[in-house]
Length: 148
Ligand SMILES: [Zn+2]
Image (tube, rainbow, N blue to C red; front, side):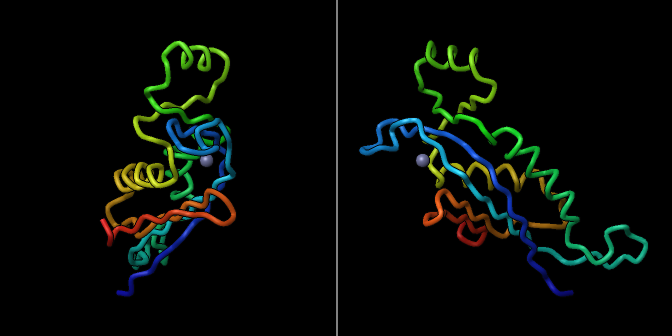
């Protein structure tokens, strides 16, 4: 059977700060991200299956990515877990979407986090082939299963 790659694109707006950065990125600022998720697998051949001819139903992929990533991160502010606790507490009291991560929230580290969580959530018959995360219109990072 032929292996097929399928890709779906997601957009979300997210703010972050990169503490310790030697430039403007140490400030709170935002990006309109675009995440491309590419899976690889064989189309279903079982004629009675409602997913006949599909590697994965795009709607099922959407549900997975929404649940893992875009629902939590869209219009959120992502901060590192060493942000002063009194500041974090104030922010969390004032704003709904404050997401605390244990890593510097660069697009490199975000894409590693996304890859780990997507791989764990996918059904067994499909594999994550790669992710591409656009941070600005001229910058993106990529994660490839074959590199890792
Ligand atoms: Zn940034």
